[in-house]
Image (cartoon, rainbow, N blue to C red; front, side, top):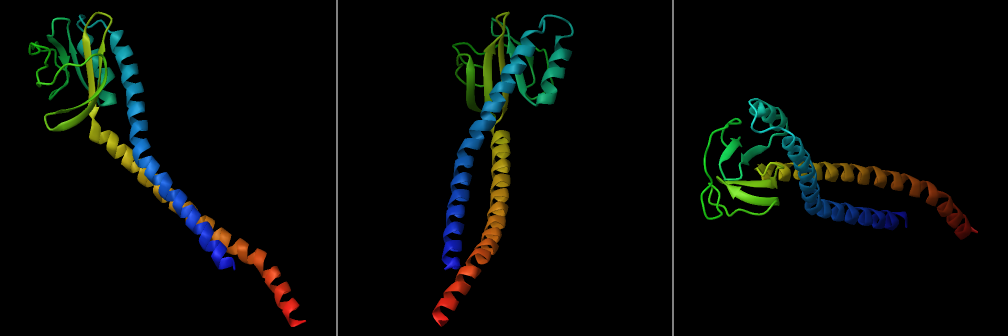
Length: 193
């Protein structure tokens, strides 16, 4: 009798762990993207407070961007690159965007907001924003970093769930035996009489 109860509870818990893992595999990436969006907005606010035309702008941008691990491109209102970390440290070289609403990588420009693109064989998650001086800010990070973070978190939750499941099943096994032993003894006494 207690074995059937044990198997039922174990099956219910196993279904719960499976549903939890399936939900996390899709929701966890959304959560990390949400966190990245919040961080990108905060960085954009910090960058907006910098005087980009001052002599120490390059140093200030490096101090803000380097710890965060984002790639950065700031273009002026004419499309000239003022600062960029693509394929190099922050550089203030001048380079024009291609005309006809396309940037130097051949990607169509998008309005202000968040985007996912592929550039130089890497999938990127990023944000376009316009600073108060009219400059265009582009922050990007590799999509694979977000996916790896989500995968690691999901695996951790899966392992912890399995450990909790095992502990709960052991606890159920002992508590069911403790609960059912007196009932079984009364049953046996009743059958002997």
